[in-house]
Amino acid sequence: MKKIFSFVLGCINSIVFATKHILLIGSFFIPYFLSPTIGFLKVWKSIEPHLKSHIMNLDVREIEIVGYSHGAAIALLCYEYCKYNRPDCAIEGAGFGAPRVFWGRVPDVVRERCKSFKVVRCGRDIVTHVPPAIFGFKHISEVVEVGESVGLVADHYAEMYLDALKK
Image 1 (cartoon, one colour):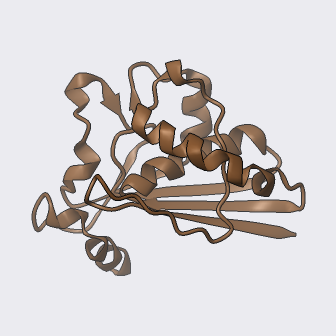
Image 2: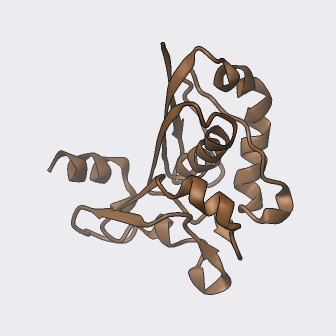
Image 3: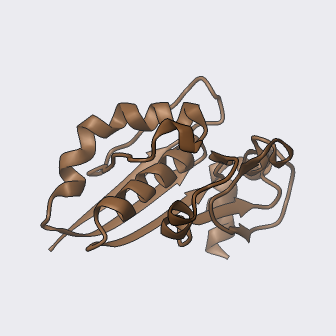
């Protein structure tokens, strides 16, 4: 039995985006009009052609997907693809410091597939509050809160998440 682990690393600086592939998996099926934030979807779609064979490998029985910051948004899209295309796999996913990825009404079938994806917020991490909900942006699942707040920006640092999870 094979297991795939995916870690997608984001960065506070919105100009920089990096991925660290540890047998990274992925692809995506939701058409653009179903409204994941377009920038995240474009990044995901650029990764998809390089990863499809890993996820579709029938020897793979377990998939874990984890992301931080911008990478958490990409991890969510990867998670949704995996749930759609590999219902035979055990799939787990979490996004630490994830921005809101979806806008408008999310189809029930997509919401159902993604309900077990963990969106983790440390303190009052500002990135987990953008884009603004008042404009219709939303997380796809409930937000799990960890740690104490030390400041909107400082709460987003990876070290804050690591410290909070150790407690």
